[in-house]
Length: 93
Image (cartoon, one colour):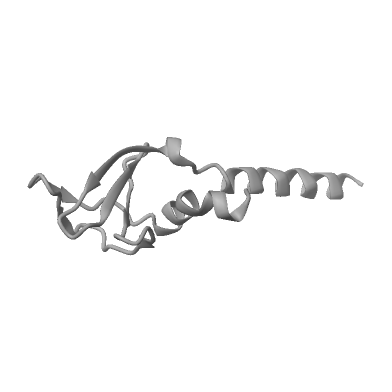
């Protein structure tokens, strides 16, 4: 009985933490020269959205150039996190 309860609680906690990412986690976004957008999350990690609205992989440490000429060094590669944020409305979570 206690094992089933513990498993149920653990499953609930994991599912809630997996759905925790939302737009409020993004603190800053920069438009890039190539039409992409780099998003910075609260924890300083970053993710890139291509011009078509899809999360894409960008190697950590790569230098990106914003439209205003600012150079941004990629910190992290939060592709799945951004994909979740971009598609939360379509998935019904």
